[in-house]
Every structure is written in C-alpha cells, then in structure tokens.
Image (tube, rainbow, N blue to C red):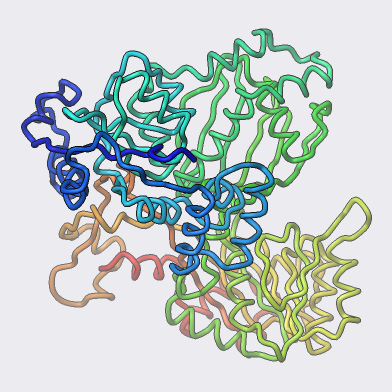
Length: 615
C-alpha cells in the first residue's frame, strides 16, 4: 500500500459556502432528515468530525493514513476481536484467504459473512480516523462530475457527498481502494476527502440518485444479443446465464431483497413484461420490471445457482442456495414453475441472523404462553402447530424445541428442508428421491432412543399414525399441520386416518397462528377509537372505562413510507382436556371443540390480535 493513498485534506468550509456550491439545489426545496434537521445541518456535523485534525493537517494537501498494508490488516482484525465482532479462528481463516487471493481483509470478512457490513464500516472508520457516513448525511440530489459515470461510482462503490474549496467529500465502501481514489483524483483534479460508508448504503444511494442514468438492464440485454427464444439449447443457456451482467443483475435482486427484509422474491414472465416483486412483511410489492429479453438468462442463472436442470422447462423444480449477502449468511429456497409465458421463479429468503428462536421474542404472550409451557412440560404426547403456508409454523416449532432442548434429552428431527441448525439436536433431511420419506425416517428414529422427536410436517396418514404410536411409547412429538384454527387440527387428523381413541390418548395440545404486520414504532399515529369500532370489535371488554386509543400507519423513512415494520404472530393455544377428549370420541365438529376450548380459557387468534393493538 502506497503511503498517503487515503487523504484527508484541510477542511475550512462553512455552511453558507456549502449551500452555494453543493448540487445547485436550494435548501428550501426540503432536504430534511428524519430527525428534523436539514441536510445542511447534517453535513455540517459530518464536517465537524475533521475539526480535531485541522491543527495537524491544515497546511498539508494530504495525510498518510496507512503506512503498511499488512500491519493495518492485523490492527483491523485485532480491533474487530476486541469489539467482540470476530473470533481469533475466524480472523486467522480470513487472513489466510486474503493472502492467498491478494484481497484486503475487510472484503474477505464480508464475503465469508464473518462480520457484517455495519461493523466493518465502523471498524474501518475508527482505524483510519475517518468519519462514518450515516443515512441522513446522504444528499437528496446527485453531485454531477463530468468525467465520472454513475456506472463507475456503482462499480467502485463510491459516492460524492459535497464539494468544498479543498476538494470533494467522498463516501467509500473500501477506503483503501487505490484505483478508485486515483481515478477520482484524475477526474476532479484533486485528492478526495475520504469518508467511510456501508456498501449497502452507497449502492442504495447511487440507485436512487442516478436512477435515470443507470442502465444496467440495457447493457445486459445487449450482451445477450437480443433474441429471446424457447428453443435455445442448453449450452447457449449456460453461456447466457454466465454473462457478468446477468450474474450481477441476479445478485442485485437478491441483495435488494435482503435490504428490504423481504421474505420472498417473485420473478414472473408475462406476455409483454418480465416482472420482479418482493414480499415484505407478508405483502407483495412491485419493483422495476426487467427487460423482456432477459427472461431466459435470469431464470437459467437462478437454476444454475440452485443446481437445477436448466434444460427442463416443462416440469416444476425445487432447489436451495446458500450464499453471503451484505456480510450475512442467507439461505434461498428456490421453486420454478412452468407458466403460459415461460417459467416463474420464487426465491424464499431465509436470513438466519435476523430470526431469534425465542417464544417471547416471536410474540407469544399469556395465556397462550402459559398453556404452551404446560404442553411442552409433558414427558410424552403430540404437540401440533397449525396454520397456512407462510404463517411462521416452523419458526415457532424451532423456538419450542429450543425451549425444551437440554443435555439430558436426546432430540431428533426429520425436516424438509432443515431451516435452522440447533446445537445438541440430531437433524435429518428427508430425501424422497431415494425413499427417505418422513414415515421411513420416523420409523428408524424410534430405534435411536430419543426423548423428543420433531417432524417438520405431517403430510399423510402414515406419518400421522407413526407419530401417534411414537407418542404412545413415551416420546414427545412436535409437528406442524395445515389447518385454519386449532380445533380443526383434530378433525384433520381423523380425516387422515388416525383413530379417535388413539388421538385422545396422544394429543396434548395444538397452537394455531398467523403472522400480522406491526405498525412502525417511529411513526405510528394514535387516534381515539370511534364508537362503531368499539362496538364492532368488542373493545370495552379490554378497557371498561375511559377513552380507547388505537394506532394507525403513517409512514416515514424508517419504514420506507409503508407505515409497517416487521411482523408478529397472533396465536391460540388449545390444551386437550377430558371434556375435549370426550367430544373427540363423539366425533364432534370443529366448531363445538372451539366453543368448549374458549369456555375453558383459550384466547382466540382474534382476541390475541386485539390485545396486541395496544387498546
């Protein structure tokens, strides 16, 4: 590393000067930050970060920040260890790879997912004694520099923030990138004043500020030579999917999904449109359509990532990908489906770092939590979690498993797929192609002398009967089922062929749930509930006297204007009692089971949701 590759020029600018020279945009246009400050105030705060250094560098055009690259890498690694963001073995592994690939340590750490982007940016800023750029310090209008194209900014992950008499303030994801710094210097005629920013923040900002000038899709289309046809041979499909623009495009789609906290990415070809949508907090949201010429290349790229057959376009396929995105380990469950105008692909995004397997964190409250604790304390029996697809059943099941997992218990699971790896738990992935089904694995598990068995999903009568037999022989069995409410699970199991007497002897409890969006805590707006609403939802039973205050969505920067941020679950927990068992033996309908369960103290999902509305 050449001494002085990162420079901090002397800073002697005022807010008025910035107003005159920055972007040619008037302050009264409304450049305002989330906390009410104008952008100018925020930028002035950024500039003040340099004030302690002014006495040292006032007369110098640049200051050497890194004298020796190897020593800097070591110091950075030790700083991350001291901050608790990295362990010693991880640092040693990253250093070996960095030396072998001739890459910088920070880049390797991010690619391996050992340290997230935010922590790396904080550490780099601290070690380089440079400011860390925050969201509210990003301008609302682009700073045009004639000889620097938006594509170069995006590729180099740099963003000009402001122009002063001493030079440009430049946000960089990699502040040690000599090539980017030198290119910027040649384009502007002076050394930039370096600030550090998260790569994701820079990329999002460039996409927003230079949206009209960026035309990656057109470039990708040109590389694909225009024509899109269904009769492309396999080798041609592989070539298309291996083009750098296509790889970058698919990676960008996935990165945007992670940034938006999306649970699914839907890629859908129509007659005159190739559409991408993200499911955020359970709601599908549109994105910029892709070029129609890209459909074969994008779908083929996704198939290659999931190791699917790219030549098979007539049958559905399922696969899985594990990758590092924004310094996080992400699992993608991929499904392709042949439709009228090509193939639709859905990628389910599983961000393991963002999910806490804890019943309290997931939103399970009393009395449902107390009932779950009673059910899970039983030494044997069957506990079911029910709900439609995407209602969080598997996550709740994992949280329940973590609550009862201990060194004194042998825990076995059979899943499709294994979504979370839990220490101390023996987990089996089913493989229907070789005959390793839920039922076959479950039979073999009983010979392993387990205390607790988790079956990812009961899909047929054979699996249900084996699970019931396992519960009869002294095992606690946890599983999921697709029903609309807790009481319906009983009738569903009987329909699958489980005898009613066997069910009453083994079933200990059922939890039904849904995921609901939460109002953004930053911008939610209180209002007095109208009398009609109070009567319609029976709110007086929760607050007999006084005014009832509800909240509604408004929208802010924190929630991207949606008014909602994250989801929680609403649950009803049914604990089997003698009275309910009698009804089961009488082949009672689900409605009657539900009524009796409520009489015995079960709080329904609707009631659980109302109590979480902060009435």
